[in-house]
Image (cartoon, rainbow, N blue to C red; front, side):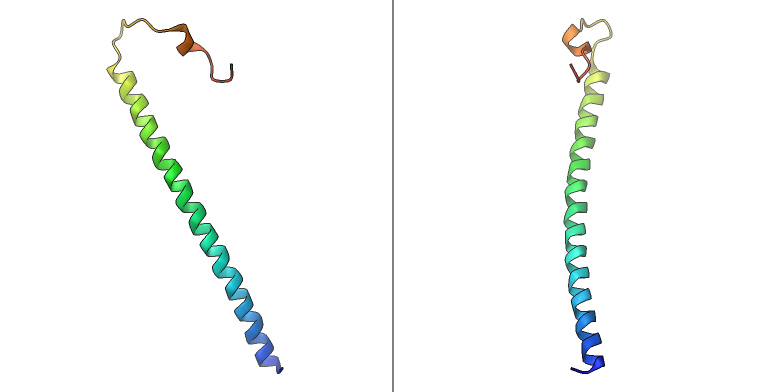
Length: 69
């Protein structure tokens, strides 16, 4: 195999790995965007819930417990 053929083969292998990496990164970005969209929707729902709550409305102590308990 000549030097040129070897270099071309090496470049084809590198391109193949690069394409696989790009595909994986695209899938990762897509999943992250889905998670961001879900979190934004949940945040908006919570914000609306707080805005619509009556100021004098009694709250449960359970609502005051930090999430790590």
